[in-house]
Length: 101
Image (cartoon, rainbow, N blue to C red; front, side, top):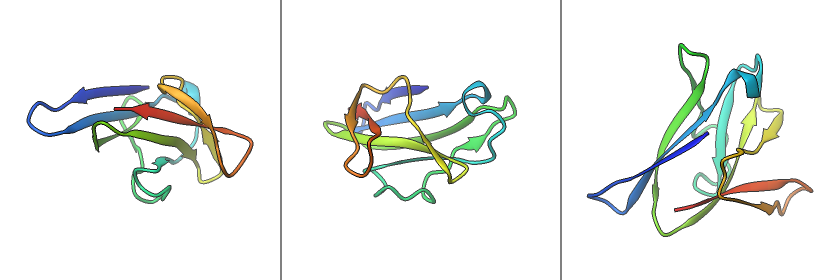
């Protein structure tokens, strides 16, 4: 799930990324990675909430397009069904999700 909240005082958008346990099962770690963090899985881990949902919120510049994916347990990649679009990954046969802000 992706929630976008555009800030009135800054040219930024607060983007909340969330994955529920029905999507990731009993996985222990999830990170959101993309061109906004140079695809570094250590920079934006999602935190597990009491409800079991993993979440992370980032402030991203508006008027940009970002590619991203989730890395689960440092082993497999997931896309978000709520991405604005999908583009082919330059590194594999998979697609990356796209955020248009």
